[in-house]
Image 1: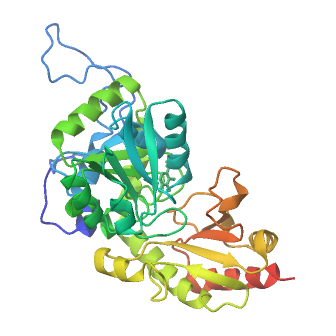
Image 2: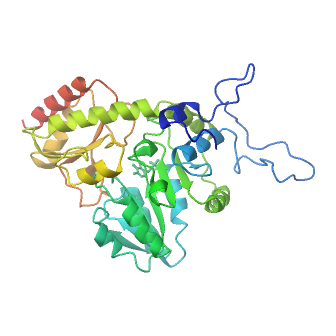
Image 3: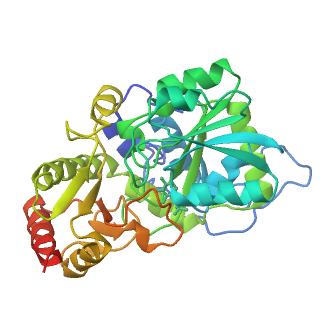
Length: 379
Ligand SMILES: *Cc1c(COP(=O)(O)O)cnc(C)c1O
């Protein structure tokens, strides 16, 4: 791991390059192979087989590990959910995991599936209520935090929760997908493990599905590496290369989309066709003070509550022209989705809530499209 003194904007550009030697390419190449030439007598440092390792994974894994301030590289997985499933394996059989009530719906669904199969017990926590969450920790094995949460945008006090977990010998795992390591570095706040859906802002172009795990403890990383090798949810080399290519522009993309999100949240706050707006960057938002104190920015996702219920929200989505009605987030293009269109979405998410993932387009163009579609929603 190198260059720890450079700022994140420089790190995302500089990390994971081939050495500066004459005629070397400036980018790593994509290694398409399933196996490697081996020594007659095993040396212990061989790549062996491409489920164990691939040189195309290494630059991204090193870069993300450095950005998250870990002492060892990240581990890439075939999807965000594969990395979450791998992290769930850290809960001992018959143990207990504490999950946020408003975590990503795939995280909650996998937790419920594992509980039904008898793997572990799930306790549901109101993660933005620090005292109530700490009160659920005694006897648990893993505390799972997501902050800000998808899609409710609740902000957790990661440092206080991780400290309370540590006192009780509980492992803290943080899904840092929404914030990205530019906005928040959970390992520096006391968390033990970070997971990412690399599909979202880290890749940033809505063209790959990938996940990652970062461990504070190199021995835990070693164990998870061994489990990834046997469970097999490895990244494809081309996806890993695309993710590194996307990572190069992370700081400019995150900066621009957060500035757009802040501007749109302020313009939308008093829109006549909305019942409310959730964005941690609005001083009226319940998460504002905590986000201001603990995050280096407020993220690029907003929740809007369209006046007139689910049907008005659907009319709003149908009327959008520049914004794309689609699930997912963190790409250069702005997306809008009514989360409750999925039967699996928790009922705690309101039917008229539309999640806006703000991209890097011109903010006035984004605003005009939202405004005309909101007016059309009322017809
Ligand atoms: C999308 C998402 C995931 C799942 O990641 P995939 O790459 O789609 O498997 C997990 N957590 C959060 C917060 C997400 O937004």
